[in-house]
Structures are given as C-alpha cells and as structure tokens.
Length: 178
Image (cartoon, rainbow, N blue to C red; front, side, top):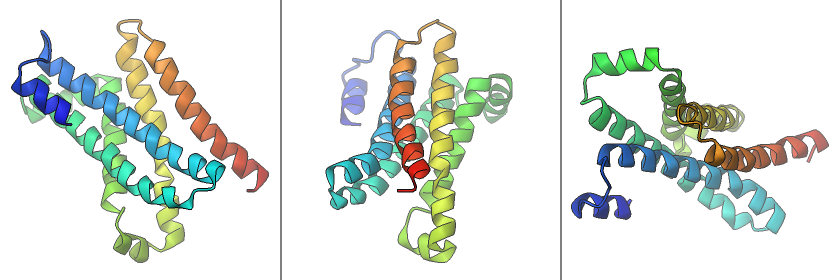
C-alpha cells in the first residue's frame, strides 16, 4: 500500500496511472488470496497451529485490496458514474465475475468477527466461509478474461497452478477423510 501511495505522490506510476493502480490492486488481491489460502496447508504441513491466526488477517487484506481494486476501477476508469458502472458490469463478463467475487468477499468480511461466528453458529459460519473457494475461482476467471484480450496468459497460468495446488490439497485431504 505504501508503495502505491509513494508512486502517486512521486508521479511514478507510468504513462497510464489509472491502469497501473487498477492492475496493481488486482494483482495484490490475488496475491493476498493465495497467501490466505496457503495458511492451512502450511499450518498442517509444518505443524504450526499458531499460523491459523494469520488466516483472518490475510482474508481481510484480500477484501481490502479487492475493495481498493473496485474503487480504482469505479473512480479512475468510470468516474463514479453509477449508471455507466452498472452498464459495464452487465456488458463485460470479466467485470461481472470480478464484482461477484467482491460481493462474496464483502459477505465474508462482514462475518469475519467472533460475534458473527457465535451468531451464525460454527458449522454455518464455516459453510459460509467455504465461499472463499468460489471467490478463488471467480478471481482467476476475472484475471483470465481480463488477460485474454491481450493473449497474455503466462501470469494467469502461474496463479492457476498456485490456486489449483492449494485447492487440490484440500480436496485430497477431504477425500482421505483427514
């Protein structure tokens, strides 16, 4: 975040600062999501239960960067014109998918505190927070469709491998009943 603010202040964001900010916040959203999903495999594999405390923080960082990504798009790309934003969401599938992922993240963020766990009950809360897997799929699809226009899939493949590995680890554990 500090490097973004530094780039804004020093006018060091390149020829198209709006595009730079939109892309950078989107990239950091994906990175934070990967880190949040990596906590459980690392915790289990390394036998470090204290890592569990990082999961909520990383999830909230993911939601923060996703919100910042949305604000950059709405402000710099669309000029806060809500009718144009609604039309753009309806017209461009990659924006619709990204917006759906953000809405799910907003729900998870709103229910991330301890009182929400008590209010929903642990099983319902856990079932709700499994939506993070759908969010990961939506985020990857959003990124893929965004890059498809320029036929640039190398970075998409890296995130697909990382997210596939993290989700595959969970499927394998569930399959084994661990």
